[in-house]
Length: 112
Length: 114
Image (cartoon, rainbow over the protein chains, first blue to last red):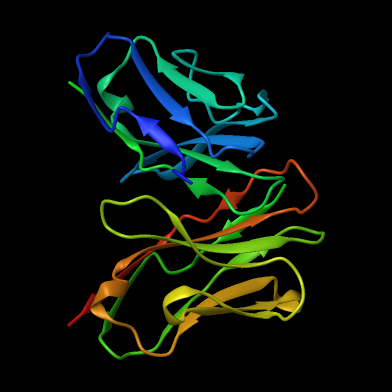
């Protein structure tokens, strides 16, 4: 099994640009989670999906952030427009029926 | 709502010392409990988990954790740490039975000095 796949692994962009992060969960998993990790705030849950439906997006910091899961094998997290304070490592994770979460390698985002 | 407390934010130990990291959770019902480890520059990986049964759970790399229901605790232990155990450790909890998110603690950074 390839595990959770995230792309890109690194993204450097300028303030105001749109950023799209991508995630492919483990095949057969029915829950998908997006996290953000920074030194200051630690690990934060942004949003999670069950069976492709967003269940809890209370962690999304503001309207500039949006996430979609058009099918069971793909999800995106979009930031538009990006700001320097969005710089962080963004992790995607998937699980089956609330069990162990498997994390992807993360996307390190730097907004200049 | 469930919550997880990890009281130690940063722990420094010498190699061969024993380790115990505290984890307390707040939730009124049955829980699943997890410990994850994040090595420097890497993603979180599962160390061990408790769903039911024997409250003493053994995980990878010599780690174990004990679920004490009366204390709402799930402390992580290792009798003798190695330099390679330097990492951040996260305790997590969720309610079993389907579509519950996992709530993570704030993490404990462990530094092992050779």
